Amino acid sequence: MRTNRRDFLKTTAAAGGALAAGVGPLALTGCAVEGDGPATGSEDGGESQAVSPLQILILGGTGFIGPHQVEYALSRGHEVTLFNRGRTNAQLFPEVEKLVGDRESDLTALEGRSWDVVVDNSATNAPHWVEASANLLKDTCERYIFVSTRSVYADTSRIPMSIDAPVWTYESAGVEPGAERLPYGLGKALSEQIARDAFGEDRTIVLRPGLIIGPGDPTDRFTYWPVRIHRGGEVLAPGDGTDPVQIIDVRDFGDWLVRLAEARESGTYNVVGPRTPRPMAELLYGIRAVTTAETTFTWVDTDFAIDAGLRPYGEMPVWRPARDGAEGFARFDLTPEVEKGLTFRSLADTTAATLEFHFSRPPERQAELRAGISAEREAEVLAMWRAYQRGQ
Image 1 (cartoon, one colour):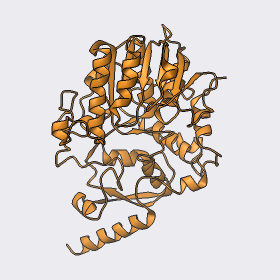
Image 2: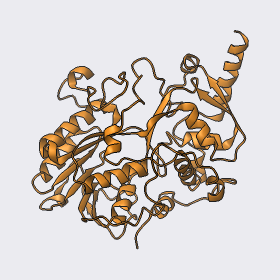
Image 3: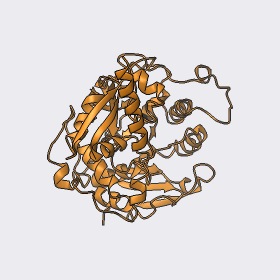
């Protein structure tokens, strides 16, 4: 029996936990806030069959982004093999072939095997992992898909951003070749080139996602906002609401990756959305439209927020002020990607699925978000902001 996305959310949530009051499926689907592209897939991953079934090897496949790729690939009629250590969500996809090994030290299970597509979901900045797997598989596999990151860009001041922007090098990062620890962006940039060198430009797909969000996300970097807004009351909102946001739903990312493999594409692509950057205010108000909470937003000046210790992308997730060299951080030209079939679910869909996932987690996990600020800290900064405004 196929494990669909809803089953995945339930199994990865551990012991369950009912949806919070007022956040049931009916409450969540009352208002659609659409993106600027058509929705992709269905709740169960879609049932349309691929024209030509592929044999797909996924390195990883049981963490956050992998299960969505697996489910969509299976729904399209592909044959999937997973290679990992067998420690994370090992109960998922019992019908799928699973090879046990270690990217660091043991690729024995991959020797002598062939696949049409290799998907490298490496979440680390360890180029030697990519070097080992790509060199082992380059003569027996047709295509290598490397999941990189927007963080490879050394300069995000361009408007608009595109794949032509410079990426990190040892020199620009100020790191000596052979250094034991590499900055995240540099490690990913080096890994991209290793994959291309092994498979060639015409057999390699490099995907550079921004913040990947949605159901199953363990980092809570987007989840903070739907959860906080669902709680209601006065919400601290950073900046003036005009800073652009481009992120990507994990399901849109996984679905498009599979479709690129089906089309036997090659090249490097940025994977963020929507196509037209969404202002921070639109993001927060769009999330609010999906909940039933009584919520107000208090916008706190950028400089004040930063001086108060609210770091962009840290204490204030998703938010990155469009200044100081980050003017293009969320202003990517996605024309090539949209032409290749990248589409975007509505913000309402993403918000509803994220809340459903969050409230299916154990109560102690719901209470301990890994991103954002506590209610106490939020109230403290809001009080500071009001005092500052009174003194002006």
